[in-house]
Image 1 (cartoon, rainbow, N blue to C red):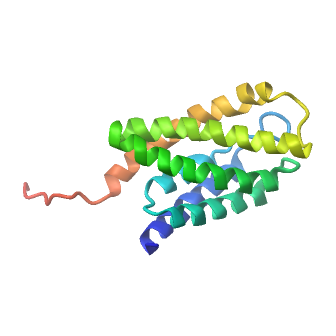
Image 2 (cartoon, helix red, strand yellow; image 1 turned 120 degrees about the vertical axis):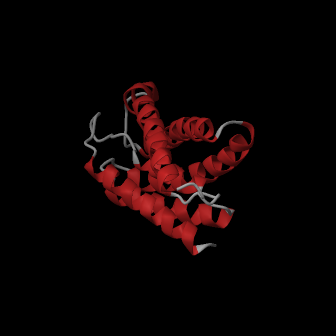
Length: 172
């Protein structure tokens, strides 16, 4: 495991935690999980399955500590442990076939949907929600998919600007 990758992942998860805490709930106790955007962006820079599992566990526990949903603690940890590897390998596959920005945006949409459905299914089994999943799909998951994709695109633009260039600039 590279310390640089884990340090960057920690910074992204910290920023995601701030977003997760400050975003108000929209439907009862539910609120869009904008930490997912930072979690996915952290996963995009990782290189091994071991790093993915470590970052997924940390993200799961951070979101579990800040959830307001009854039963959300267990659901967050399980959700991140399943979603993390799926997003990591999905991104590795897509980035070979599509443009980098298209890959990150597409996998963010899919990952947010998968994460939301896993989370809601677990909470529903635990008895935390009684409304049908379609209600939450339209009210929580779809808006989070859009916002998370935009957030990942914005952050990737910032990262392009601050990362050092590969070629030396000899033009003054």
